[in-house]
Length: 292
Image 1 (cartoon, one colour):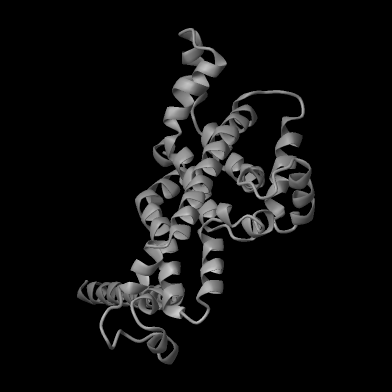
Image 2: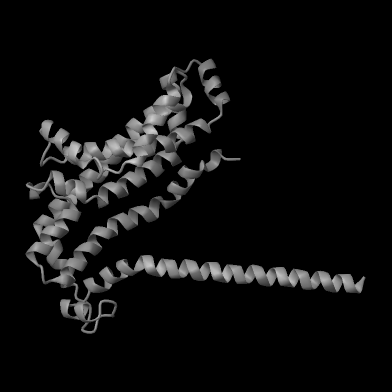
């Protein structure tokens, strides 16, 4: 009996030791990955509070002559920065609003309404996930030019909405389908119409998924560079912040500390927004409280 207990203790200790080692290795790998991913961000932050000479000499070093806040005040005093900030804000508002509105209605039809060819429609929609916007940039440019939206923010918003619909619809469709059909039947018994069920019951329940879709679209619109460059190239007054960096770099090509400050200012709103909405992404993509 004592021998069996001793063997059992050794096995338990071995298992616990192995689990501890695996945990240490896992956290070490995750820490190394985080350092690699955070490296560019840290470089921009450190470079933004130093002089250009210090940044070029030691890109990853700490300030040697104090913190140089003038890199930020110079940008914040520039009117063109606030114009670009306003344009980025318009993009980051218009794109998610339209994507959430359209994808929620489309996902509702594909998830809760039966009609001939529904599977084919959904399969065609999912094909949009296979093609990034850069692949179709030439036909997009031709269509935007025919619509007269070149050098107009709507010429950027509409293509981003179109390419944001497939992924958003797939996310919302999965969430809508997880809602019990008994809830829909009960609403109809109480006199609710199909649109009433969608508007007053389905959408409030699906707030985590809607927030996840909106968050992903806000971040994508805030960071978009290539499409605004193509559509808004001849209209600097409509440039968002990513293009504003290009303009700032052209004006102050040797002021790398100022450029790093501009990059940091671009990152701050997106990072803050993500920190406040990250839990909605996880909840929305996994089904949230409807699971289990």
